[in-house]
Amino acid sequence: MVTNGTFLLKQVPGLVEAGLDAIDISLDAGQETHDRLRGRRGTFQAAIQGIRALAAERSARGLHKPLISVSAVLLPEAVEELPSLIREVRVEGIDGFFLGRLQYTTEEQGKSHEMNFQKLFQITPQSWKGFAHPLQPGSSQKVRAIVEELRADPANKDFIKWGNPFWSSQDFFNYYENPATAAPLGRACHFPWDSVSITPNGDVCPCPDYRILLWEM
Image (cartoon, rainbow, N blue to C red; front, side, top):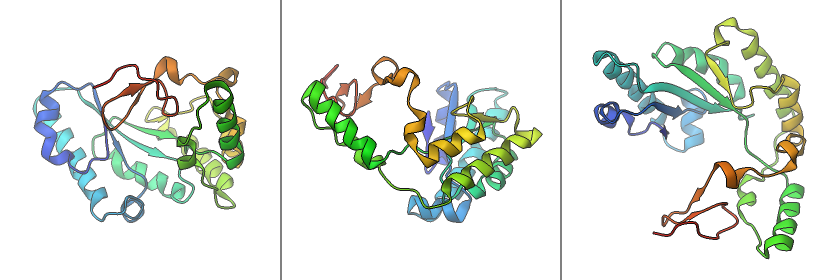
């Protein structure tokens, strides 16, 4: 289960009793930056309190599950806070830290996506527009430097799980310079084979942009 942790503290006993294999709590950066990015004060501390309670409950019951992890995205505006964030949450009893790249696209890629969908499916996709946001100058350099710093620390070797485990720091730099450099293997979309999209009304479809129903409420 993935959660922002806001109400985690209230649900701890039930979550442990449910027999979950793993719980992943999303944190963006240190307390001040995290709360600002989430748009609500207190969200960081709520998540930390939930993590502490979850670790304590698991220990009191003599269990090894659910595994507790924290995940963050390499946000250029907050990336420099990641080393201190990782040190802070490590002492709370979590089992690991997941770190992934920012999902974003360029206007050029989005327009190309639109053109291909119109040609192949007679559909004009819209979801890409939520991921089209230009990065500030210097973002690529900041991300590369932090990736190098985190990987150079022996304490992080088995603690950090990378969303792109085979990427070098230069690969991250290239992606943040231009996301087109990180096209999927074979330049193909694997979403229909390993994921589904669930709409707010419960409809299930193979792609956020291709709304043919697989199952309907």
